[in-house]
Image 1 (cartoon, one colour):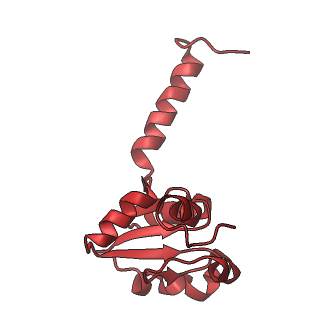
Image 2: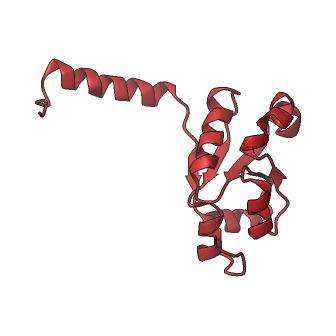
Length: 137
C-alpha cells in the first residue's frame, strides 16, 4: 500500500528524515584515489583500521595506521581520546567500508569528533583504485 505524498503520514516521514539528517552527524566518504592524493600532498591524516588482526595479515596499507579492531574495543575504548586527537582529520577503513562507517558514526555521535572520513569501499577499493599489489580478499 502506498501513501500519497501529501498525506500527513508521508509528511511526518519526510519531516522525520529531515530532522534526523540535521541532527545526526554523518561521516563524509572519501574515495581511495582522493585519499591517495591527500596522502601524497603530505596532508596530516590519521588512518584508523578497524579490521581484525587476521585481515591485516592478508592486506594492509603501506601508510602508518592506528589499528583498533572492533572486536577488541574493550582494550581501547576508554583510551580513545588519547589515541585519536580531536584536532586530527581521521580516515577510517575496513575491508569494504561498512564497519569503518559504523565506527566513524560512533566517533562522531557518541564521542563528539568532527573531522571524520570513511574510506569508501575500504581496503578493497584501495587495491582496485590505487595499489593492485595490496591483495584482495
